[in-house]
Image 1 (cartoon, rainbow, N blue to C red):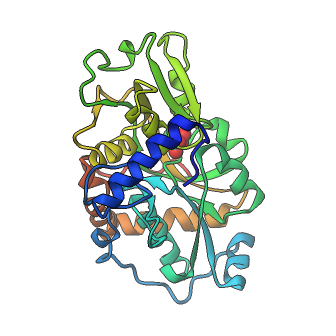
Image 2 (image 1 turned 180 degrees about the vertical axis):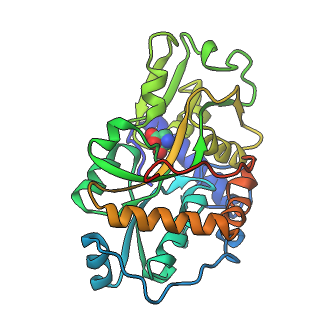
Length: 306
Ligand code: GLU
């Protein structure tokens, strides 16, 4: 993971990796919990790889030809999209959704090449074809639909606030006036928290783990993004961090696809629906974000495509 080269952040990171190493934990996690999210929770999950998959899509055909599917993912979101820095393995709910889709397209987990893509780089990575599709806490919205298409939503999150355990004043978005709040370039919660009605002093960084490091280091007072992401960090740092207030935005997650590739969009949507119906989706949820405290809800109805 790349951290901003400020001395303070570097110090926080050094402290964090020391803690992680001392506990035998993951270097990639900003956590004080010895047992962070672990791919062992998801090891038991597997999906039957279809042999005869065929989709009239140039992206799909190119992937078949190279024998690999290139999937954009997040690497620093515990229980959602997380890369273990020692094994380099990715785990989390979004990673399982990606494996389900890959299986239905005829690709085994070994035939997936993961590419870490941060929030602010997603539309470009998808539209330029650097990834075949993107699965990473990716909110479907009209602005993004000018550049790419989505399949989904497969999950509904909502923006919330992460604060230090001893924080007393911040209880929700109406209490952040004058407070330092960190969020991520190119993310919807950043746009939201910058609204004048909240009056927050906003710090913009490129990775959530950098915001969390700044908060543990007392440089900011809160981090805002989707509740599912923040709960993962709180679960990693149970004695230091907590999620407060109710979700204050709608964040429907979709798979980001090259604009106009209707056949692949439909194939991806059909794959997710099939795995929601056969119970794989619930099993994946329970083994990932269910562990950090997100409550299971029946999956939302698809809007893209209907
Ligand atoms: N779901 C929000 C978004 O797509 C925030 C999470 C993220 O940055 O990935 O912008």
